[in-house]
Every structure is written in structure tokens, then in C-alpha cells.
Image (cartoon, rainbow, N blue to C red; front, side, top):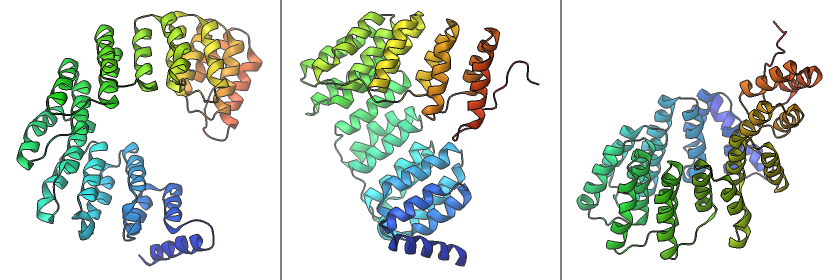
Length: 380
């Protein structure tokens, strides 16, 4: 404890001698901590600082790190630790945060427990915490509980669902696969004197287009426009997926080309979806064209895009481009699967491109962000 207290003092003294605020110094200290057990101990100690407990982003990022490492007991440890701060835990916003955090890492029973304990802590349960609990259901994939709570809680607590409540419910129904039931909630929203918003429609559009129900997606699109809800890039990306999944690549390319007339710019997802469509069609020239458009836009290709273009280039025997793409991977410090790069190396060797193969192996070992243990086929 004494050692850790000294650590906190160092953190604050460092902040005092630099331009960092104390909270920023704490945030940096937690971010740089690689030992997760020490991260948990530091988080609990820093929780004694009043301003620290107001920083939702620090809570989110810490829980996310622990969840990625599957350290669910440690997530429980830091979140249960928060209950000792009686003034904070008696505030609905703080309790709702814990409910949401438990939900985001799949610990729904703990989220439910925090919600159920709110009255005994003199903490009001309004629509804010109800929505947090419903969101925890969705994130934990507790869809039956979601439908039950959606029916019971508003009446029990005398609260009226808002658009956020319905959007959470729609997301859950879409994730469950009951898309028609989700779409039917648009009428219920309006019957309750509310207006479906862009989130409402984007959730339903994404579900229809991504599951091959293109006609239902188009019907929903027309309904959205009729209600004066203006589509954004996410809306168009959903339609783009629908077109690509229906092998309508030329129509998809035209849609991307027309985005400027709607005062929208393609994002990484837009380019990636179109590139995937051309790769699946074996049209490497168009895939190259749109890859270059992506790069010219100032965006960086991601793991999915690299997977599409490198695989397509190797299948077509275009190892000149595959080599350039591998160099782009390392230039962008993108974490791709080692199997993807090994496939390039193997293909290069079979095509007698030994120097390029050795160069990819070298880059895999010498880059400064991830060690790829690639081998030439002749290696042991």
C-alpha cells in the first residue's frame, strides 16, 4: 500500500511539473500499465480521487482491456469496488454506468444486480437506468430477458419509453434475427407520439441489407425518406453491403461515385466493401483502382481490406502488387493474420520470386510493432 501511495504521489507530482492535468497523468499511467493485475490495483486506488470517478472514458477503456484479456473476475473486482463510494453510487448516472459496463463485457447478472440494488441505495430508477439495463441485455445477448424487461419495467417504474428505448429494443431484435418484428416497432414508436430517428432506420437497414433481404431494405429506405429522415454515410454503407451481397457491383460503384452529390464522403468501410466486391468478382483492376482511391482519400487500409486485396492478388498471381501491399501493411502498422503474409511468401517462392519473399520475411521480423515468424518454404 505504501509503495502504491508513493506511486500516486509521483503521478501527481509529475503532472504538477508538466502541462498534464492530474487526471490526464492518471489516465496516461493506466494506459501505459502493461501488467493487468497492477492495472486493477492502480484503478482501485485512483478511484479514491473524486474527479477520477467522473471520467467515464477511463472506466470504459480499462474494462475493455480487461474484457479483451478475458479477465472477468478483475472487471468484477474494480466495478464492485465502486459501490463503496456511497454518494456516487446513490446517483443514477453512476449506477447506470456500472450497469452498462457490466453489460458490455457480457456480465448481465451483475448488471441486473446493480440495477436491482438501486432502491436500497436511495437511487432513483428512471428511464436512464432502464435504458442502461436494456442495453446490457443486448450487449450480453440476453434477448429473452430484453423482451421481458421491455414489457415489464416501464409499467412497473411508471416510465414512458423514449426513442432510445425503442432503438435498443430494435437492435436486440435485429441481433436475435427477428427482423420483421424489429421493423414493426416503427409503427409502435409513432403510435406512442414519438418519431423514429436515423439510428432507428440505420439499425433496421443494416440488418436487412446484411442478411440478404435487399427488397425489405429498399422498402425501409423509402419509408425513411418519406419521414424526412436524411440518410448518412452509415445508411449508404448498409445499402452498399446489400448491393455487393447481391453481386450488383457496378451499381455499388455508381452509388459510391454519387455520394458527393449527397454531400457525403466515402469512409474506410465504404471503400472496403466495394473493394471486397471487386475482389470476389476477380476484377483485380477495379479493386486496385478503388484501393488507390482509398489511399488518396487519406484513410488507411484496415485488416479486412488487406485481407481482401492480398488474397485476390495472390490468387491472380499478381505478386508485384501483393509485394507492394505487404509493404503497405508494415508501413501502416496493421495487425493482419500471419497466415495471410505466409501465403504471400509461399506463392512468391513457387513463382521464383525469392528476393521479394525474403524481403517480406525480413519485414515481418524487423518491423517495430509486431513480430511475424514467417518462413521460406525451404526453412526448417
